[in-house]
Length: 78
Image 1 (spheres, rainbow, N blue to C red):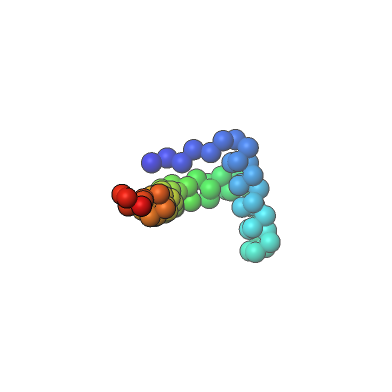
Image 2: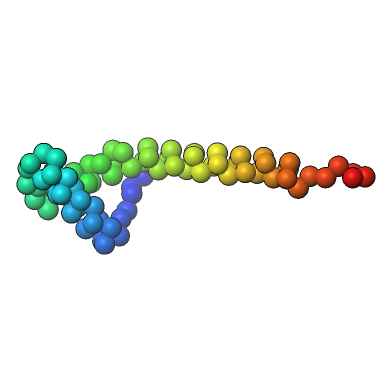
């Protein structure tokens, strides 16, 4: 699974990586290196984070659907 980012988001993330490396590690990170780090994280962590997010959303929706029966169910004759 490949995580694709639009150009604007990719540029923002690269700038944030460069800022993080500068602020936290006191190291300059070139745009080329920041792109490599971003690509590594997207390839390595992206699919797992995406799958977890889908599972979390599915569980949330299932809980809401389970509650729906209690909210709208009326016994016959009531």
